[in-house]
Length: 302
Image 1 (cartoon, rainbow, N blue to C red):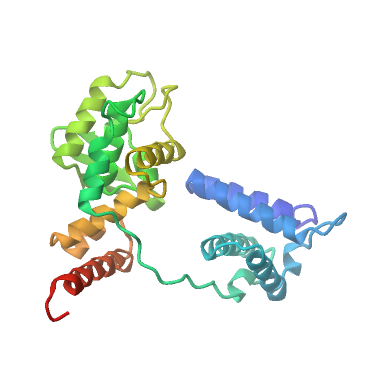
Image 2 (image 1 turned 180 degrees about the vertical axis):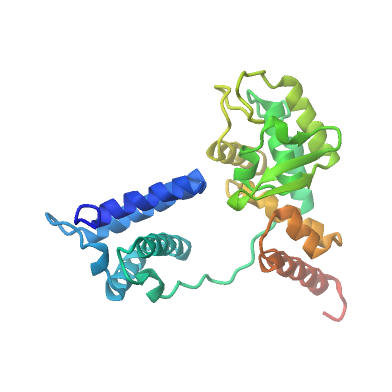
């Protein structure tokens, strides 16, 4: 391979292109491209070209990781950046540019063990019920209410909600076809309130030719992940005085409340679209923590 194609910059461009061709989500592609661009900047000394991929060794990566920590990056961010670098060198190994994936020669930083904070059922219901009412005045109240009802009522990821098309809805039987991570499809039941809110929105939704998206923005285009996050943050701030609430907060609440009500853990796994049961089991820890807190407060022998 010639020197131009074996340069780090060219290698990153080819890898990002491969991610796009593989159908990796646009959000992941943007994140990896940004992380690898920053990696390239770190490797580039003033007025000189960065080293070629073959010259990158474990010592360089360890120094890079230390540099990230010195700049106060969170463990989550460092893990994501390392995953991007590992993906790049795995791609280059398959191309024959490098002999080994040097990214796998450094350890992944461990995440601090902490349980997700989960809103109570009363708090969730109060917030959802306040969306789409007269106050605060918003241009698309029926749409916003349907967004909240589906986030909590179906436990969807924000990307899944944004990706729903009109053809994915079974209005008669109250089912949604959802495309999850890795483009895996699953069927999710819609509870009564979510179905009612969706019908109200659909009765007002503009008919836009060649636009299959369920949720539309003010330009009648597909409402994006970022748009949904902004809507959730607005209502959470105004109605609950809590700007930390985000779309995933409702997914946590959905799973935790199902488990507390006696739902089977494997059924919850299917509903959430988790590939591994261990991912779902973290909600068990949350539920048990809540139970112990109630016990400590209420039992005379606690």
